[in-house]
Length: 305
Length: 308
Image 1 (cartoon, each protein chain N blue to C red):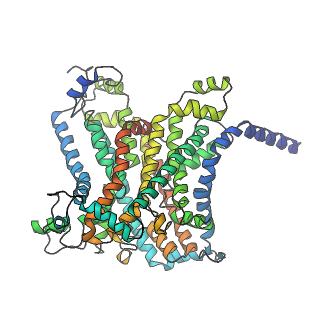
Image 2 (image 1 turned 30 degrees about the horizontal axis):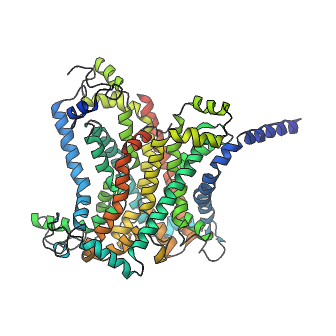
Image 3 (image 1 turned 90 degrees about the horizontal axis):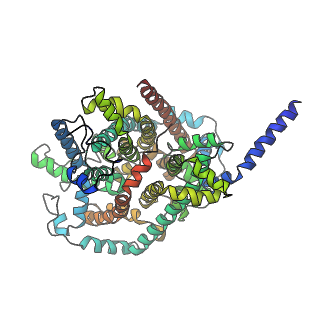
């Protein structure tokens, strides 16, 4: 292996197949000892098992029939997979007076509205923050960075007071509005827009385009990775938000809320709870699988200056 | 004369604002919501922290009474403060370092393994509520996998109530929180490593760098100071904000508040006792604590970053 061989994998357009077949396990680097590589593999393997184990256990339990859940000593893997738990999940939901499909419908509508709304609002706000030296832009940018600290759980009670005074508690807006104004999305979008060359904007301005048009026709088509990232982060946050004390009417509740009611049932409901958690887990994971490359590309511009 | 000067400056400011009216219009919808649901709540919390307020009647101004109560009279607050600091000081730095370490090692892997391992480590965060499974694993009877394993090996004679016992609940929740903590900061690190200019390694090799450790300390880390800062902010937010894991696994509130943090205590005071004034006081204290930690850590990282 010569020094130049493993370099510039991305810049040089070698045929893809050759590269992949050679480097499934490790990238070719300079200065790598075999023992070191084995160490890396062992370390990641051990921690990988620790990270994967609970999820594997949860997925297995979702397919365990009742007699396998109550078996002693408990087993990790499932022997005779069945869909019993998913059917029972439907019945359990009906016991709360509302069919399961209603929770799924609520979750889906709220998540889609909040995710797309967040993308629209955050993107529109991020463009001037990145590119326009308007009076107050420095201050607003600092406020946005500062607010990254104030996660939803930290501002929960003050936010609850404000939303209660506006009469939003126990409406879908109590879940949607806080998700729309998450500052991480604006921050990531702004960092990404900063990398777009100003010359592109100038060209559009000379053609007489308004700033709105520049955003939607010049900027937005060029920030696809950031848009995908915002979609994933926003969707994951809202899809997993059970509503806590923000929603108490059963017909307005969302899927995670049903998971916590089922979990309270203990070991007898372990299978049903795992089934619910599997249904909850899949959409964000599938979304992330498709968009991982975009997320990484966006995050590489995320640095704090 | 002076008046005229100020007038002209105001005019130019107004003029500049008018010139950028489209920028403000673009930001308006987002900023409206942001001010309504982040800025106003924080400001309101500061105001309400000096009052007695139960959501129903108009807040009563009580001066520093809530603050005195918090520091002097409230033993529970001291317990949750201690728990919060333990959570923050253990999970914060450890998961920051783990995020960095995993991202670094993942970066050594090949093109197919890398996305897979990234997904694997990020999965607990992505799965959102999947941490409920720890409730099954740690179940207090002998059906819990962990109890059953430890009993088969002979370490335990009888099942442990991991999440009820006051001595075990905090350490156990810290492990779960670490499992859940490879979030946005981790992704930023993964991205930072992949972004490092490859030609720098080549140059480094010529200059005598001979192993991956030297590469890490002399080339990669100095080039990643921005990611280090960003991840630190996200990490502080996450480790001071630990709450859902606690309430969902160990109860709300936990036995004798043994594992409650400031955040869950605020929820307890606010949503079950409706002492919103006092809840705001504790929230303001938490804001101050987080800003202080943030300033401290940013300072340390910046100094560390500029030394290289």
